Image (cartoon, rainbow, N blue to C red; front, side, top):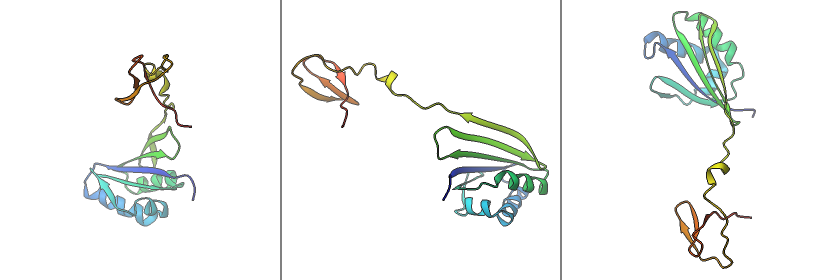
Length: 145
């Protein structure tokens, strides 16, 4: 199966006949692109799909050489948290390459108002996104074991 990535392809200028022809040629020439975009999901001029398209750098360079007046922008979001990138090709060359390293989200610092109750006998009621002891008025969360 392999590592899957969600791809979004935008061909600039969007909506032009030449961009449509380039997309069709990419699908014809690249098995990876055909597999990725086989569902035909197109939203606001961008094609979307998920696959293991490992050959995308070569395929995008090749198609951009065939259509040198267009800019091919490809964004990828991988299976693993923080794996996001955006690249663009024109005339066979990469002209834009950004990789984002996203930190893991830690909710703990945002739960400071959820302290364990200090009273001995708890009278608990549900409160917003947690619970509250009506005796000591402390907010807290239940931890499932």
